[in-house]
Image (tube, rainbow, N blue to C red; front, top):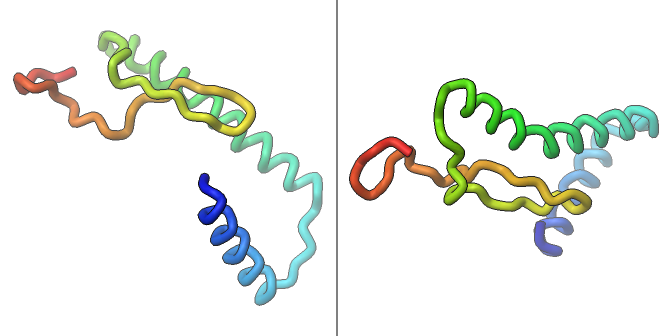
Length: 90
């Protein structure tokens, strides 16, 4: 996330909070943070397991690295067309 995107997101959250003043329990914030972190870490691993179960070979050429801020996680590229230049499924 760029600095400009972060500022825009923060402004949006602040505007919503201004209209809906509800206290947020720090424990609930911690649970939410844990859930997002776990999803970020394991989504690539689960995709790889599912691909292996289906008999597909790993798409190493389409694997990209996403920086989650604290953990570097390999994830499947969202830009795959599903076929190579010759029209074969990849």
